[in-house]
Length: 252
Image (cartoon, rainbow, N blue to C red):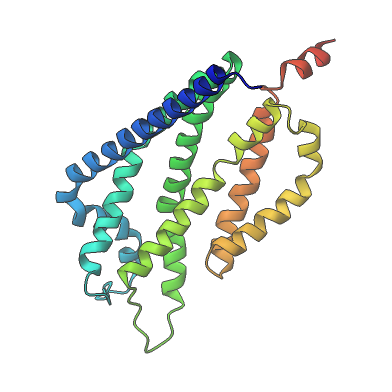
């Protein structure tokens, strides 16, 4: 028979974990809300900053439009919420780390901190690459192919959906080196195996570019080529982070 004291102890442990998880989530949500309230007076300016790449590519006299009655309020609010989440993300990640850290071994803790920091850095790097490099080229390409008699005027809500999709696509794409390093370090996949599937990764990169970008060659290349190069960067960096067993065997 099961000892009642053991069962009660397990239940108490489970409840304590749930309470701690709720506390960590509330702290993360409060942090995002506080940043949102601080940024809300500048919502229009933040949206103007996000819309700048498209506005610069539009023909002279052309503007963006709002087809929804509430779009002029909700779209800048959504953009400000996205900015607030990015600013509060280090604190949110810390809350996640504080919740899972007690259950990790020492070597897992040593790996987790660099992974969290580098993941945050590479995701922001991917968003910056999309904003400063991809958007000007892509929007300029679209504007140059506007047919005669058609005025290019984009709805602000659709523009926000497009930008968010591109941010997520490029942010996740720039996580590839981190993913490769973690897989090699944990011994899930060997470095030689990852090198052997390089050709499949290149094909997959162009498939991903075709799925997550507009149906033009320029946008697809701007996602596929960095994805491939980042995979190569991950392979290069993974050489210096081999598992201890692999390092010992190679030295022998």
